[in-house]
Amino acid sequence: MKFKIYFFICLQLLIVHQINGQAKTGKTTKQPLTIGETVTIHSNILDEDRILNIYLPQTYKANATTTYPVIYLLDGSIEEDFIHITGIVQFGSFSWVNMLPKSIVVGIANVDRRRDFTYPTTIAQDKKDFPSTGSSKKFIEFIETELQPYIDANYKVTEEKTIIGQSLGGLLATEILYTTPDLFDNYIIVSPSLWWDNQSILKLKPKEHITEKKIFIGVGKEGDIMERDAKTLFTTLKANAKENTKLHFKFFEKQDHGDALHLAVYKAFEMLFEKQAN
Image (cartoon, rainbow, N blue to C red; front, side, top):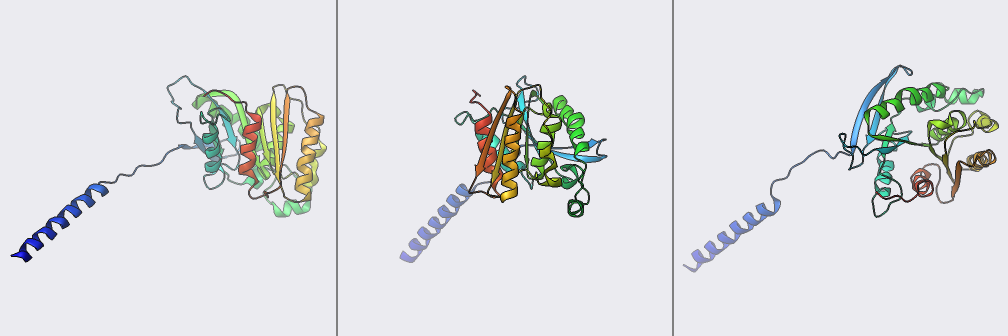
């Protein structure tokens, strides 16, 4: 009799334990984690399809009147810089951080960055190392006449535009600043590969710009050539700066070419954007 009572109690405890376990576990659901959208557009200039990864602020609504500045990110593939840069943008635009305004990020995914980010070179070794090189002028035309008009027509944007470029992307951003400066309002140039074509771009005089420019140049502990060229770029721009130009330079002594970008972009946002109410 005692054994039956003991067995019955144990059975009841087991049933209660199973019920509680089921209640705690419950039914699980899964859904995609979305921070924006991926768009493929065809470029007649480049004669190819180009992928754009587009981050939209949480407050973005297509049918609303609120507009947002746009940050154009070179090397903007998902597996490159898109996710961690948009993370800085999202964090920096939180109301309790208030480092920069809520912004749209357009990550331009790469097809051939050596082709798109470099201008023609006379150096044999450069041509050997970069056999597809020399089409930056065409890529800048794509940005100006196809990409920016597409974004302006399809998203709620202000006129303010920022470009972020690192390494060869920094070279391209510098070329844009020198040749078509009014294409962007803000330039974030990190670890630029200004060694290209024996630093020929540094021998040019930057074209005068009409609109206000905010420029940040950052470089890590990346060797004498990279560090010297970045400082020379800053000095050259400063010597040619007008009243409507704001220049900033930062040397990151603890970072190198591989990890300077993230910290440099954060610092650039601090320096370039004034505190704004969101």
